[in-house]
Amino acid sequence: GLAVILAARTGRSGWEPVAAALLIGLAGYAWQGRPGLAGTPISTSAERGVAFDEQLVDRRRAMENRFGPAARWLVLSDGLARQGQTRDAVNVLVSGLRDNPRDADLWVGLGNALVLHEEGILSPAAEYAYRQALRIAPNAPSPHYFYALALARNGKLAPARALWAELAAALPPGTPFRAELDRNIGVIDQALAGQGAETPVSP
Image 1 (cartoon, helix red, strand yellow):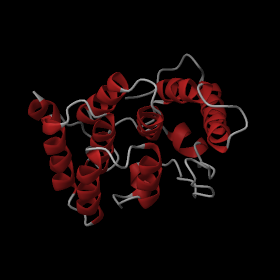
Image 2 (cartoon, rainbow, N blue to C red):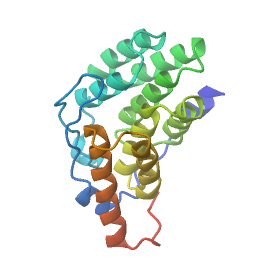
Image 3 (tube, rainbow, N blue to C red):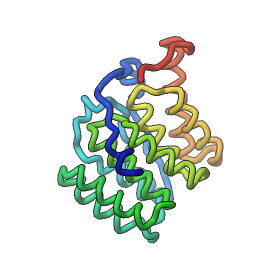
């Protein structure tokens, strides 16, 4: 069950130095009336610490249904995480998913909350949450964006690239968000070329 999945955790291993060096940041973008939103740097958790990231929350909210059943659970979870209560932030979203198991926004929120709770580590539980969101809403931007971001920050560049490329292909050329994704993909391509495309990325 979900409780067993959420209990799965991984240690700190396999940070990819090339990814940390080359994934230098994201440009601002306009999404649903949010022009000029500041970019979120891609970096390792050691560089970020465990601080609550308001910019990531703004990005998630710009992509989610603010008036759906998930909204109140996400607001409550964000509030707890903002105070450093990351375990409680996760548990709130688990409660929300008991009532709304097919809500992709809640699954994305859970993935993000688990990554924050694990101090940046993409645990099996977080991967499960993101994959559930992708399965439920395969055409939605949020699961693609945040799963790819977590993968990239954990040095898993090839799968991150694939997710961002799929999302970029669904967006009109010339839009700020599409341009941001294209830049991210280009940086990943440079990183992969630098380490050798056939060299597997450490987990």
